[in-house]
Length: 331
Image 1: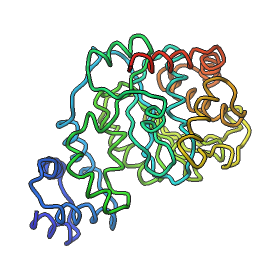
Image 2: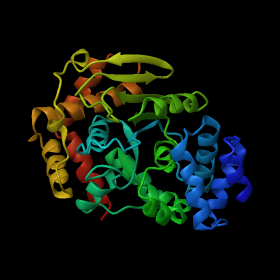
Image 3: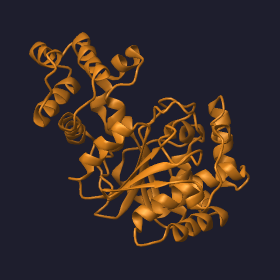
Image 4: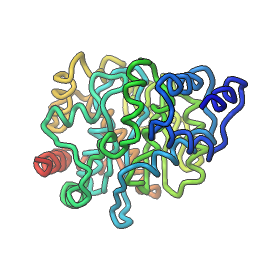
């Protein structure tokens, strides 16, 4: 590690395979905690390069607990987190709306990064039990149209760095890896980012991955469609700037999509959205993200058609049914 650190301190970068090997060694605890902390700190002082991120991704996918669904077309809605906006669980709710519309969702998630409640937090609050059992996940996907992949259960390699990340107390390059290492390797993906540089990185990476993707970057810094401002959508290499009005919605204020001050607040909003008892702003922001995910699955559909499917899923109770089915099957 000493030679690696000297290489990085001399402003040199890592090749893809070198980055892969280093992360595998970190996972196998071949370096001491001080060396690992120094290594992570490098990427707080300069941007990570595409080859480095590719190598780190390769390592985590190689080390993860494998899961597969016989080539089914599935989608993941996942953001990097860390935007500091403390929204409620928009992408998780949108995932159930997409599932309620009849599409298969393999949702990859974790505990919160910068908000009160991450996807794992809110599901756990409702009594959901995480699993990495292939048979159970397959049955959940079949009956609920969605299964949830709690990241720590599929990435044991991350256990070795968890204490160091916690002690550092700042975002590291590991935060960028979450949306890239879904062990189900879904055929379609919505990725939300809070930084334009990260959007570019993901765009380069996805050029070599055979999957339909949409990268979302809100111009005011959200890692999802917030409806508080226009956003950039990178769809299979083509870039679009879209406004709330263009999607058929009014512009929202940040306070209208806040997740509250506690997990209880976030769970209350979550339940109210699924029961169609939430505010118009809360429901609209979920519908916008769900419709974009459906369009990722069906790029030949107009956005309004996708939005109609999302509305039908939510208003008919199908999204709630998907949630209740998944919850019941986990017990």
